[in-house]
Length: 185
Length: 279
Image (cartoon, rainbow over all chains, first blue to last red):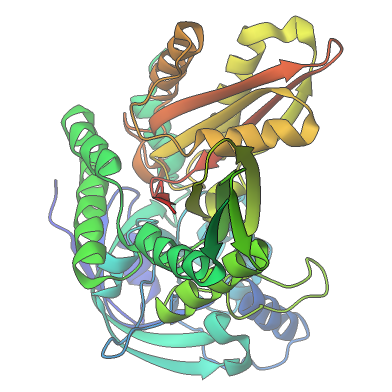
């Protein structure tokens, strides 16, 4: 397997264009978290043209609601949630400058089209590998919507965060290609 | 009549909640290792290796395998010669409260489906009780994650559909689920009974250990055939393409009405969590 690509956040259009489906990527730097409730709030503000409580330009959002941290831990197990639930909100956030999403599972056509249009990428991270993934998170800070508890928006500092490009900015879809490649009649 | 204190139920359920979330069964570990040999996709192999490492970290550090610590689904076989002093359902919920709080497990339950807020302690549990002869209580805690549960379905078919109809329903359901339920998955299938009972059968099927075939050779063959067909679909680990889409398929059946032909598919992610204790 090819050497993983190292990606430092925040990311630029040039970074995004280079990524192709199937690429192994190690993300370093700060990423944001958000799932259903936080997305709904961000979407409603963005729709009204109001400022967001966080700057999403050049950022990557990780769809995660971590388990509680044990004493002495930075964060509890933190694997991805199903990305499809964020599909209604994702295109508008990409329009506002979001460059990457990390989660698990397939995305809608609208989201895939928006990735091409606004130059963004969707990364798959291994669902159910939450204990392992949490080891790559070095610090956690709540940056918005603290009232949402596990769904609050956090800023994570990650080191060699292991993801795979599932949908790229060129219309590539690893879910479709992968099934085609390994399907047997 | 044998007497059991409610505190024993509380402590047992709390322990099972934690153990089910921290310790992936040896049967699942073994099938991951076997899957590594069969998987053709490099990405798929990497994912299986991550899952093995993840299970090891969770076990060593006593932390959950997955951040989705599930709905606490409890199967209880209550001996008719045992008497619990107090409310046994309250005791199970107290055990869930204790296990999820003291075990640093994520609380994922909303009090009312429309108007509710997070209950903060992962209660209430879903409790399935059956009465059995004897003076023991067998309790199984099977935490169920939302991602795979969402890919499940009940179908009220026609008796003319027969077993081929069920097979096609299962294959189609798995194909449509694609990457969402965190493959490699475990597939529970219910056939027969009524609308609500068939879903219970599919859930109950998930309690079996990987590799444990149905005692009726007819259904055991259908399980083998479905597993083979699912693993030809190409979905692979995390749906990114590969050979290992399912770890096993389990079928549970029940008598049906002459007019009805219910079938259900309950999908579990690779974190096939369940722990049992006998009191």
